[in-house]
Image (tube, rainbow, N blue to C red; front, top):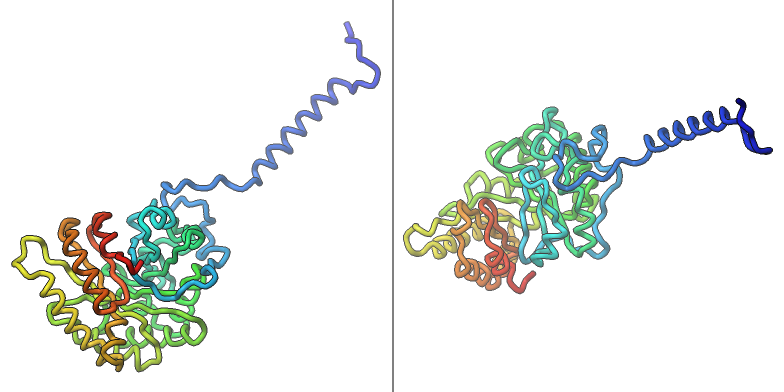
Amino acid sequence: MARHREPGTPPRALVVLAGLVLVGVTGVAIWFLPAQATPEWSSPLTAASPPAAAFPSTTATPSAGATASPSGYVAFVDTAENPRFDPADAARRTGVRWFLLGRVTAGPSGCAPRWGGTLEPGLDLVANRIPSLRAAGGQAGLAFGGPAGTELAGACVAQDALTSAYRRMIGAFGASFVEFDVRDGGDLPAVRRRARALADLQRDQDLAVIYSLPLGPAGLAPSDVEMLRQTRAAGAELGTVNLLAPIEPLTAPEGRMRRLAAAVRAAHGQVREALRIDEATAWGRIALTAVLAGSGDLGLLDARKLSSYAARHHLAWLSARGAPPSAAVVRALRGPRG
């Protein structure tokens, strides 16, 4: 028997057809909605950033009035090893304001910068959190090179391409300071390419440049001293020479800090001569990074001694690498300088 239909009510078939159309349209709309933000614990290789974008789609600019050069204590973060690291949260918890994010090395093509030599610039989760750090009052710079992989200047032999690679990486993250953990002091062509590229960049923008060099008992290696000379001769200004100082273990003979101080004094004379600056300026151009084999190798008392030494000689800043220092040691190293 036929159903009775109220006047003005559309036929049932038409209602069903309209419902199907609505479902289809809704599905299409959902398809085009933005993907859900990737949680911070996700693998960098599955980040929400489009894989085709080698660099972030928007340039991250430093906050207004940001100081170019770090001071106080600088935290180093290997973003490939610590993809969950949140610099803004760390700044709030520890009071540390300055961060160096690395390590940027050459990718397979030589002239393409990659995090850890493999990850495209725009896909690094830690580096993509730089805007949040700046909003919290902190700053982050980029760390090029390191003990693994090849620094861009050693792999990219075309001068213009090298300069462009640095410029794009620095501009993408709005970095006002950059570090080069250089292990190629004996490769003069690479040393000169890097120096010329940095001189070109500094002509175009305010950029503080840090060279991080291994510290030995007699100071710097002769090849590293020559690298400082070559860099100055090319017209690049080195804001800081960061001494990577291995901290002797607690089982070492008495006088660990005295031996470290002697090595720093030797390096001070080398920096002064290579950069042709006076004694006081040379001290201000030196930073000291304690390289720890074990977290307990730098205790609270030694950290306070280093902080006092840095304040007395007006060192640029202190830092630590290798095994993570305790929170108390970081506070002592940070000291009243920030």
